[in-house]
Amino acid sequence: MGTVAASEFSFKVGTRIDGQHGRSGLISTPHGDIATPAFIPVGTKATVKAVLPETMKDLGSQALLANAYHLYLQPGSDIVDEAGGLSKFMNWPGPTFTDSGGFQVMSLGVGFKKVLAMEAVGVQDDDVIAKGKERLAHVDDDGVTFRSHLDGSRHRFTPEVSMGIQHQLGADIMFAFDELTTLMNTRGYQEESLERTRLWAQRCLDEHERLTAARSHRPYQALFGVLQGAQYEDLRRKASRDLEALRGAGGTEFDGYGIGGALEKHNLGTIVGWCCDELPEHKPRHMLGISEPEDVFVAVENGADTFDCVNPSRVARNAAMYVDKGRFNINTARFKRDFTPIDETCDCYTCANYTRAYIHHLFKAKEMLASTLCTIHNERFTVRLVDRIRESIDGGYFQDYKTEFLGQWRGRVKSPED
Image (cartoon, rainbow, N blue to C red; front, side, top):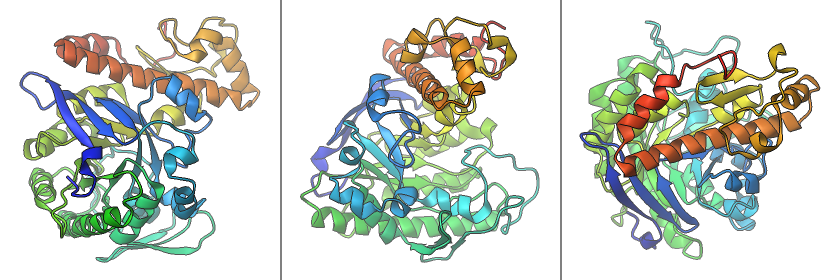
């Protein structure tokens, strides 16, 4: 853990799932505690789209994650710093996370959307790029040169630049700058990238240590190393061991770890397990980019403590609603005269006050309120699911709850009653 003001951040393990890496716990930060496992909603540009920060607190969110790349471009990390940090800037009273910009390296470079799982279709190509996309980012051993998606201006991210931006943003938990590869990259490139990410992680630790000392007037910010390695067991285990062994010039260690990288969905639990075999038990582990219920159960039982994803809010803006049986689209004709809540069992503001027919109308009328009401429901659904998973771990009935929930979960359905 960091040597300067490290007492402001801690992690305590609670109840363990028998025979597995999964556990409950408590992360303590300068802006409050996070009971784990916990879902961390994504507020990319210092806002969860369409929803007030106060509403996110009301629906049970314990922390929010914002994006360093986007806030660097607009409004500028210096402005967030001048405002007193991310929490004050966005009027969010709880803990905050920022990612490093590493995902945007891959996204701008090859044009894929933000998804954790990909399909390795048997094609390997280190120059892969999504159809119809232009390469906006170029990686070298020192960092990444990219063009802004906003205005085409050129910028340069290095580990030191990423650390400087994230320190200015002031999040309680930051991530080291990494290179996210795709499943289409060759084994040789995966090995080169893993070493590049390790060297960047060392530079992040050194700069984090320097900035922590220079900014002692600010609350301590925890730094998590990010594990890559795609679907290769030896690379995932090596990344875990390598990052655990890293120290800054003054002895600073990583405060926790992020498990990143593109991977095939059916390998999620196996890969998380490989990493957690090697990582120290007394530090928290964050899974980057998941929220689907079946993925959450698998990640938690294999050792993930926290995780984030844009999906609950993104699909809500496209009329997709989560209920215990699956995900359904509320803008279809069958809901035009349905005067029941989205989910009779849900305790969210939307379900307490509005009907499916009204929300169907909002989407058909292209009213902004549709996104607000549906995002509230989906975020509450995901937060509540993970709260119940945590309760089941502490209560000793995780496997029973997993079996019960996934026994009714069917993915995409036409309606909750089907």
